[in-house]
Length: 451
Ligand code: FCB
Image 1 (cartoon, protein in one colour):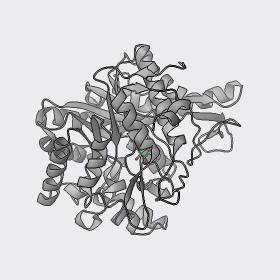
Image 2: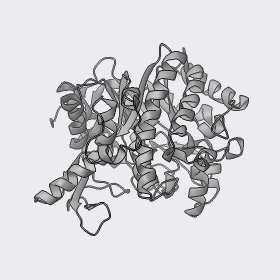
Image 3: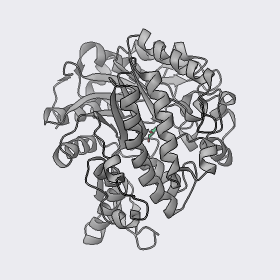
């Protein structure tokens, strides 16, 4: 996988950046409540964290100019369901339709391809009150939202994605209680797995009608799950983590039904015809990648396993995540080897580091630049080995609301000055721009020579 040469970007390969509505938009007064509002309030984040966020809606033009200034092809963003439908159902709000209509045009005017995503974790609170993802109905309401987005996107978006990381939403939001809606309920977790999968199929059917010439995809966070120690119990623990995190979403999507032990546990939720519904063919699978999981058996844990720390001496990001580009190569090759080689695109990859601005407010984030370049090279290596990969999007453009971490962990290529919300491009921004302009991806050690 490694070489000292610069790698060439293949022709037609798309670079881009990814963002999401809840983490950037602000203007919370102009939408219905999201499950995140109350959850973050309980986590004691200041109201401004989500009511203003990065103030993106008021600075839309400036932010899109920054995205276009990178010289990349694709711009991924999400549409807020509670902004379009405050109660999660019924007629969409006219102001919200006009807003996203303008957003699509503003992206296109800058020569970028809009890649909207329907659902990036911000369920309308009213839907949660009706049971949220634990309830089957939520899948049908999501499909109605999909139709609204499909009508907006038709003829303009290049690609539309249905879900963002339903696996993370199910595990962290419904089992671990670390994300909204903050549940630690195995039965809600199982519902969230199946109903999000079902929603994907239902939404794809509606989008095909509403936006016939748009490529459709959905997005999973994929992580290799490896045993952290020798011994059969650790291997089994890693397999279980893989089944829950990766395969509970990949297997049914590719027509194989649910893996054990989930198949038995989900039997009560799966109705006749569901497995066909949720395996409707997609044009592209979005893969988000950040790190790998090291898993060990742990009898004291209710699920029988625990995550181990990164190996000593490994480089870790501010999130505590091991920097492990090889894992991206491995998950992409797994899609080729085990799932029939679908068309894929990396829809998120990036890193938080404790950026320190210099006296002039500039951030020399060489580590982030090296991270991006190393992972882009791993993705290109998988492509060269036969993975049908056609793009790589960095998470994210401007430092934004990192969910419960607020603004403490910053992933942007562009610094958000906390007091003024001013945007200041970091070194990594210049590096990505240089890569896009030259079409050459240098080895990570050489980024200092780039920009
Ligand atoms: C992903 C999410 C995204 C962002 C990154 C760091 O799991 O999709 O919203 O928070 O992690």
